[in-house]
Image (tube, rainbow, N blue to C red):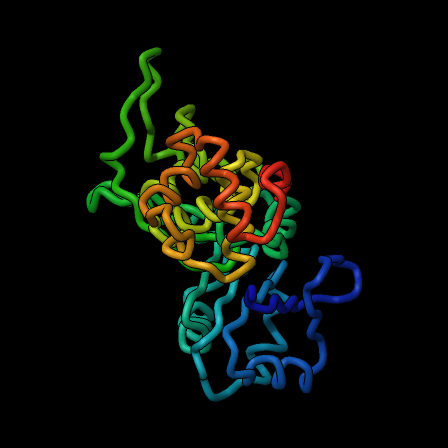
Length: 256
């Protein structure tokens, strides 16, 4: 379940599924919720009520501020939030795109801000849920056409789907797949759900019936695994055995 998103703003800003907090009571109740949440401040004025209301820090939440904040205010925000992302030293996604990413169902797989730290060979990335990912800058190689990554010109584009190092572009899903094991598992689960092969259909139905790969009688678990991964074309007799165990007609296996 994605973290709730609170918006410190007036009625003009529309963000689907986000919860607007304006009054002192609304801010106080939201801030002291135990569940981690993401807070969005479109301008510095929207931070005023937060600074006035919250006097005891419970830094379990994350804050994204669209405007640069003063050094003094940053000290305060760092005591109130576990993560603070603001554009003083971090390059951020365009405002209208960022608002979409913050409330997207797949926000944890999209990026909203980035900062290169060349002396530490690091590219620091913040996702739509404001969790971070650190990627080695040295992992990016120039293209055959001569385009080289430029860590001095970092930006986020395409609704959080692309990281740019100058003219050099990296797809967010490629970065996540390589450097984030949990994101890789999510990608594989999505791939399995959309796979229309007979092996994927068998796997979905097997899981639905709560059966293990060892529940198919004369067929070994290894055989079932190979069929589900599409590594072998099962014979008609094999499909009949699988279908019988799953309680369906063999001709229906590919429809699941």
